[in-house]
Length: 330
Image (cartoon, rainbow, N blue to C red):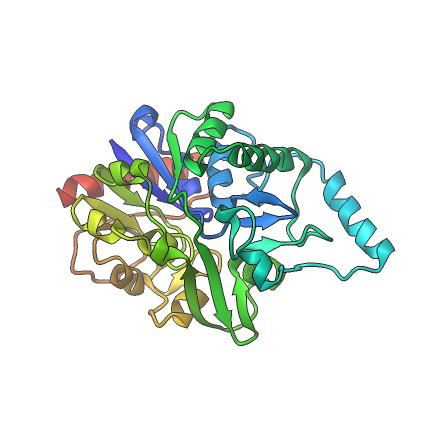
């Protein structure tokens, strides 16, 4: 049995080659939900959906976002209507009172759908409509996620990190921004001053997550701050990881990050943007998988391989290194 902590694109890319190394029926994927947004009344779970779409064979792997060959008629019409009506474009973050009203799971991450600032495909939107409607019918996010995973034919068990709201808020020189506002709308341009996981102090990992964290754990090459950080902010998660065998794949090669805003976010939260900084952020990790060109000296066992993941063969190679690291860590 093995559990992957997944956020962003790093861990989903690793999962692309994991099936031949770790039996899918014995694999659980815990998805980050700190990046979720409610957009025009529909709950969008980007990190969970990347796993669902990839496992279902429909992910747009050029962008690692959304469904391949999806149409965007509704998205385009929303922008056209806003222009025609003279409405200001997005992101249109709703006011403070609206952030804590209505659907509890969406609090602190509510945006208007007017001229929506995130491109949502038409088939993609059907997933968000189904998710939100099932939530409104009284199902938990865990139940809904498992239902969607079944619909997409996944062989692994996919669960969200919590059924409670946690919102990743990036504090910048321009003020606080929801992560999607910071990364999608602002392209990660504002200087990062801190990162807050709003609601984490009152949120809890689900029973499914607690059970999954009793197994061996692989922390994929995801952003340590905004992809893995929200999970670590939940009560009991760090303690659970300290009690099991954990292997982490660095998203850095020494001080060079493969992709995304990890370096800026680590620097902005007072951590060294490097493999050494990742090791410092993961004191519970028993071993690390590093790139062949990464000479960082760590105080824990290291397995080296080419960690760049460009296709399924690359992912399988890194997955095999994770299996070897788990064996070494034991």
